[in-house]
Length: 234
Ligand code: FES
Image (cartoon, rainbow, N blue to C red):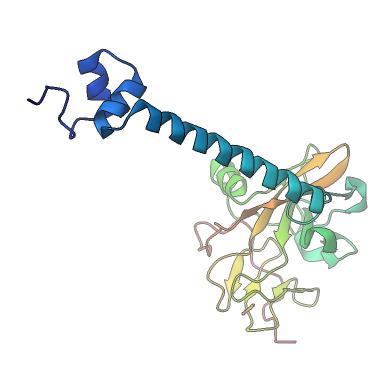
């Protein structure tokens, strides 16, 4: 004769209420398995966890130096090394924009005012900058860490001083100094990393890639387009 506890369609929680027992009792009743089988499964699970921890420990011994290298937070030079510049005056590795090979990133340090023209303002600008991983410094300047890789098919994108923008040599994708999409086949704006300051140095977390900055339109573009109207293929 079947009891009212034999309905295998009941959830473990329903069995717990019916039997007045704990979750384990409910699971046993629900699945129709013995307590010995339950203990065997628990022992197997414990061995699995121990094995995973041992594997992780071995990997950390083989690759002890991942910390500080690409794929993790990378500490770069002192902030003062990266001289800021207005949008029009940016010159690669001289002022405003610096390439850092260890972080595979371009560090943008942009001074507001003058030829730097933010097209949004107020809360709209704040929200766009937060979503795009801009950092506003205490002196009022702005920082950004852009990943060097083109989001079209993965070529390394050079900054072109003559274009006041990034232009990919492979298929012509064109990005503003802050990585915003301008034209070409790229499906979105350039990817960027989370950056911060640590003990007076610039730090880029190359383990955190922001791949969610869409192509901007007139209502979402943060910076004005470059001062060089046409950027010809190199
Ligand atoms: S890889 Fe850059 S445009 Fe195609």
